[in-house]
Each structure stands twice: as structure tokens, then as C-alpha cells.
Amino acid sequence: MSDSFISRKDRIIASAIEIISESGLASLSTKSLAMKENMSETLIYKYFGGINEVLIEVVEYFARFDRSIIRTVQGKDVSNVEKIHEFFDTYAIYYDNYIEISAIVLNYEELLHNTGTREIIGACIEERNRFLLQLIQNAMSDREIHSTFSAEELKCILMGILSSQLLDRRLTIHSETLRTEVMESIDKILMLVKE
Amino acid sequence: MKILVAEDDAANRKFLTKLLAKFGDVTVVGDGFQAVKNYMQALDDREPYQLVCLDVMMPKLDGYKALDAIRGIEGKYALIAQEKAKIIMISALDEGGFDEEMAGNQYDCYMSKPIDILEFEMNLKRMGMI
Image 1 (cartoon, rainbow over the protein chains, first blue to last red):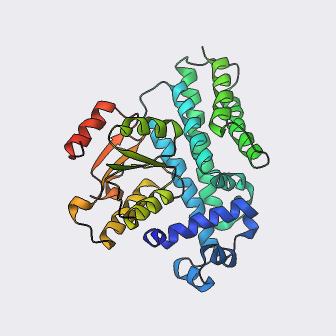
Image 2: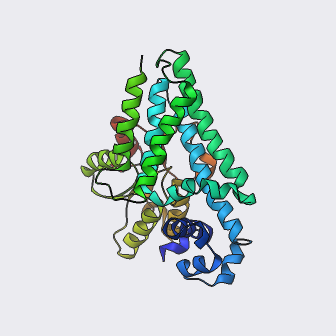
Image 3: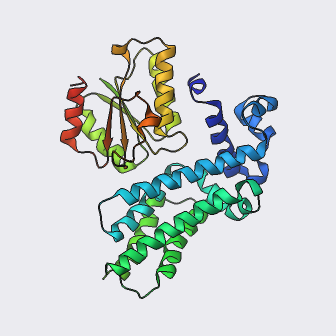
């Protein structure tokens, strides 16, 4: 009964994320959503114009969290290297507790081919990369880290760690949390490039 | 006092549990959906929570929406002011980053992470919880 106090739209979005995570993007339909939400298919149309609208909301939801992370890290009064650490730490905590949402970023390519989600997911990933790149460039110009790698290379290495760990977790069970594993690798890399 | 903590960061969960254990029974959940469910269940069991700590950035249902839902439940149960839970919103955002408009006037206090123990206790006193 507590569900009725959570907006139906929010519940539909959460169910859509679960469906995408469990069975893939192609499985998301008004039918699968109706089954999961135990409601009629026609009722879905009361809240969304169609399945594409649901998908757009899912990606918006995903992008909102990214913006929150960036705002949070931006506001921290710490060094650039510490901000880079915080950036990954916040993502890792979030994905640890909501592994289903990682299916959205791992479906990046597919979402780019959908005209409704292309701009949102593209802007979100671009913003995420631009922000990290800026932090690395700031750390370099403030001589917190040296330039063995270019800022772009370092950004790719760090992002690569998060992406590959996420992919790996969708295949195998790990005894350690995502946060522990990701942050161990991120901190090792940061230690290597620290001045 | 019964306390509900909704927080997705394990370290903060541990910290808040330890900090709040001296004031009452602490239940910890990791997402907004679970927080709303627990709150409702406690009311149904006639063992309501007096204090709720909601992290703003939570999986599935964020803190703002969980706050809305909890206040909605209290409205539905026609709770009088004294029966309603005191709600502390917690986030890693500084006060400027916290969206007061989204939270409306439904929360009792806001605290940014890392939680300062003295400030936390002061807020509990101010709200008449201790």
C-alpha cells in the first residue's frame, strides 16, 4: 500500500530500469511494464505517451543523477585529485546500491540510435567526460599530478576502470563491493601520477 | 525513540547507526522506496518512527520524493503535528546545492556531509528529540 504514496510515474520508471537490467533494452515494452507493475497496459498510457516516452524519462532520471554528482564534487573544498577520487567514489557507491541503473550507461550505443534519447544520453556522457577532463587538467596545471599521460589519456584510463568493472559485474559475482574494487584501482593510478 | 535512516553509502550508514543508537532503535535502509515502505509499515504496526534521516541522492527514489511520500502517508493517516516524524535531509551538497524548493517546507532540518556530531546533536535538541 505504501506504493500508492509514491507517484505511479516514479514506480513505472523504476520498473523500466529493472526490466532493462534484467532482460535488455529490447524487452522494455508497455506489456512488460504492465506485467511488472501489475496494471493494465492502457493505464501506462495515462502516464506516458508510449514506451519511447518511458525510455526518455529513464534516461532523464539517469542524467539527473549525473548532474547531482558533478554539482556535489564541484562544491567540495578539496584538491583536484581529491575531487577526482570523490567523483569515482560517488559513482561507485551509487552503482553498488543500484546496479540495475548501470544497464543504462552500458546501453549507451543503443540509446544513441534512438532519436528520443540520443541528445540526453549524449549530453550526459559528454558532460561527465568534460567535467573529469577539466578536473585532470586543473590538477595538472596546479602541479598536483604530472603529465606522463595526457589529460585525455588519463581520463580514458580512469573511466575505463569504472566501465570495465561495471561490465564485469554484470557477468560475474564479486566478493568485494564495486566501490572497493574501483577505488583501489583509481587510487593506484592517481598515486602513480601524483607529483 | 524509533529512528529510520535512509542512506546509500555504507560508511555513512554505519556512522549514523552508531551515532543514533544511543538515542533509540535505528533501522537502516539503502533506497527511497524502502524508506517509504518501512515508514508506512511502522505506522500500520502502530510503532511509528519519530525521526527520519533521508539522504537526498538515493537510488530508485531520491530523498525529495521519499520526503513527499512520507508526508503524504502522514496526511492520509491524519497524524497531528506531534505525531509526525521529524525529518532530517542529508546530502553531500552544501546548503546552496540543496534544492529547498523541491523539499518544500516538509523537512525539519538540513545537514550536509560529512555529518558533524555536535551539530547533529544540536539539531536533535532544537527539534525537541533529546
